[in-house]
Length: 215
Image (cartoon, rainbow, N blue to C red; front, side, top):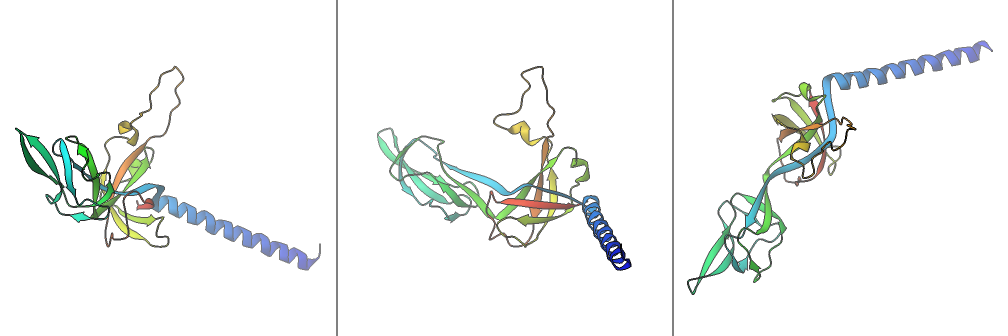
């Protein structure tokens, strides 16, 4: 092999070693300083607007996108009581914007029937599911970088506000159970609530997100 080729080969090898070193340092630095997961989503307090009594829904203003303050009247149910017709208001229990409307004006509704669901769009947060093997690295008050899939390239600042006291599977509609002698251990996740700062106007509940918690 000529001296020139040997020199070029050595330079390539040195370059690969340097690149590998930088890549290794980057991933080591990321794993040491941050805890990252894409098992997260934007959420908030769901508000249920239910029929207060059994009767006819004679008026309804709860269209998708309509915003109401707590105790505002969203509709009216006409009820027959002692041979008389009584109008009972349908109110919203908390501030919220209608995101799902299932009510139909002039239909007969039963007491307690959900007519619509709402969220306070100015009070949303992110719920991140952290593996139980990593939860000891999470503390209330830690800074968090939030990346929402719907708005790539934008970083939203957040803070860990609470750590769940039970795994997400605990409250599942179909919790895992061991019905045979063969048991396979599955790593559980614990929900961590992350408050977010700044404008929330472009966020809606259910959006997928990635979070990076500063250790």
